[in-house]
Length: 562
Image (cartoon, rainbow, N blue to C red; front, top):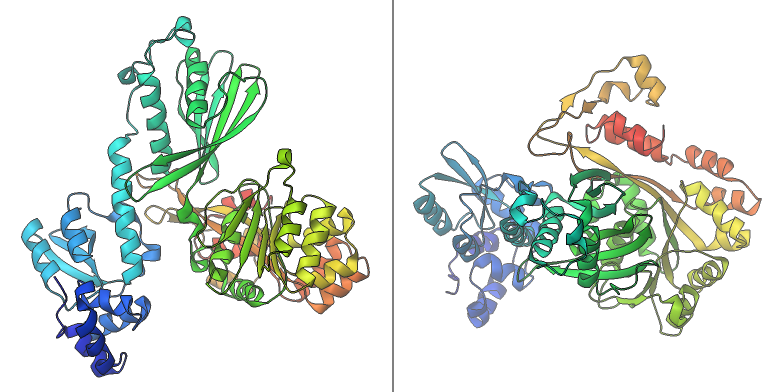
C-alpha cells in the first residue's frame, strides 16, 4: 500500500521549509509505489537525514526523541514482540510500564500502528520518536537475537544431551554423534547470546572445561566428561574444515554459523596440541562490531576530533596500539568505514581477515605461499590506492614500505603491540626506521584499552576520601565533579558489568614531538612533551571514565596496571 501524498508529516515538513514541498510532490507522484510510508519516501529519496527527520517529527508533535545507540535490547517486552505488526508498520515496542506500552516510531503523526498495537495488546500505547535507520537495524537485531534465543538455553543439562554418563570407551567408539553436535551448537549459540568474544575448549588430565570470555574476563560455563575430549575436538575441527587426523601441530580454520536468514556469525578457530589433548579457541567475529559509529566507542570529544582530522588527511600514517583484545581492530575498521566511499580506493593486508567489509579490497596474508605483508604492500602501491591498511607492522621491511607509502600521497593505517603512544615511536626507531622518516610520516598514534562498563541497572555510588582520590590520580579541580560508582550485580549483567568502553590515548605528532624524535628522545621525554600539550595518557583517560560513572575505579586500576 503506497503512502498518502497528503501525509501530515510531509505537509508539516514542507510548511516548515525543511523539504522542498513542490519537489517532494513531483517525486511522490512518480515514485510513490516504491514506498510504504512517508518516512520511507523521505529517506529513500534522500530529502532529509534520519536524524533531522526524527528531530523535526518530535518537535512537531511534542514527543520525546530517543537515541537508539544507547538502548538496551533487554528492555524489549517479550510478549509484545509481534513480528508481523512490527515489520508491517516499521515500529518497535521498546518498554512496558504497568498498562502502558512505549512504541518507537519514525512518524508520530501516523496513528495506524498505535491503534493496531492497542488492539493487539490491550495496552495504552505511548509514542517515542527515533531515527529511521537505527530503528531498522534494531528491529533486525531483535529478531536475530530471538532466533538465537530459541535455539539456545543457558539452563540445559548435560544429561539431557546424553553426555553426562560418558565413560572411557565413548571417546573412541563410533557411537552416534548427535548429542555432541547438539552440545557444541548450544555452546556456540549461548556464547553469541551472552556477548562472548572467545570460547575456550580445554582438556586436562582429569577434567575438561569450557570457558567464555565475556567483557574481557574468562568465565567457566561447562565441564563435560573428560572422556569426550577427542570427540569434541573432532567435531569442532570438522566444522572448521581442519584435518581431524592431524593432532601434532597447530591448525587454523573458520566457521560460519547462520542464525537467521539475514544474520550469520563467523568464528576464527585455532587448534593447539597440549599435554592432554587439543585445546581449541574460537574467536567470534561479528561484523556488527565493525560497523560501530565513532560516537559510541568511548572517545572523548577532543580525541574524536583528532582521529577524524587525521582521517581527513590525504597522506600520513595512523597507528593504533595496544595488547591483544584491546579493540584495535574495531578502531581501525571504524576509521575505514568512515573513509569507505565510492571515490576512495581502499586496500587492506590482514592476517587473518577477521571481518568482511563490502567496498574494501581485503587481502589475506599467506606466508606459506609467499604472500607476506611487504609483498602485499608493494602490490597495493601499483594499484593506485588512496588508503592502505596493514594488519600489523611486525618487521623493518613492512615498516619501511608503509612509511614510504605514507610519504608519497597515501593514508596508511596499521597496528603495533606497544603499551603507550610514546612507546610506539621508540619501537619504530628500535626496528631500525630512521628518525626523520618516523617524524615526517606518522601523523597520529592511538593507544587503547577496553574497560568493563558498569551495568546501568544496578551500579551504586561509591564514596572515597579526598586523600584517596588524589592518590589515585585525580586533581583537586576534578574532585567536585566526580561521580564514582561500583559494581553490584543483577539479572541483567555479569558481576555488575555489562559491555565495555574504550579508554584512549590519542597523540598527534606535533612539531615539538617531531623535534624530540629527531633528537633521539626516548619514550619518557616524548610522554612529558605530550602532557605539556594537554594529551591525556591512558590512566588519565580512564579516570575520566570512572569520574563519569561509566566504569569503576577498580576496573581502571586493572586495565591501566595501576
